[in-house]
Length: 161
Image (cartoon, rainbow, N blue to C red; front, side, top):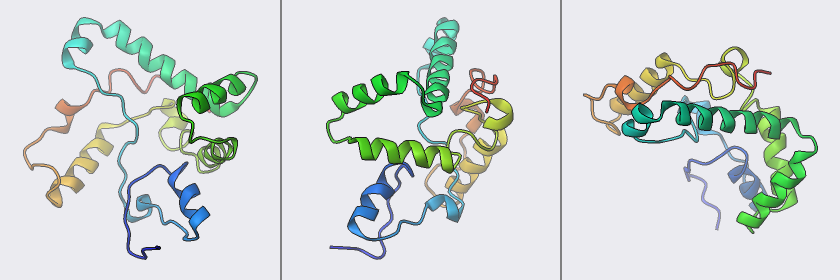
């Protein structure tokens, strides 16, 4: 059954692939102004306070990994094999589609990432996202977004295109 009025948040690099296999053309919700950060890393304030260097090394390694993966090269075969091992639903076609879309649409290499590096985040964008969610009642009106996230570990130029 195809639903003409279905809304689902997903990744532009995966769900549209499945939808197109079924026939309908997806419309990205980002086109309607929903500009959240995707796949953020979460940890505790305690870990950030007590092991800041560890957190920084993890974030940097993650961002460097994305930069290397999207450039391709010899290591991509081993990475794809691990992805398929850990997620048997993944196929070579799905992985190729995801890499193509992420590169063509600038999912990782665009916006602030061009100057601040992969994983770029800004206080202004967090504020805008929070306000848009509070305005429609998804989040309470009295939350300070600056206390909900940290920009200490990003915007260091990692993987700049």
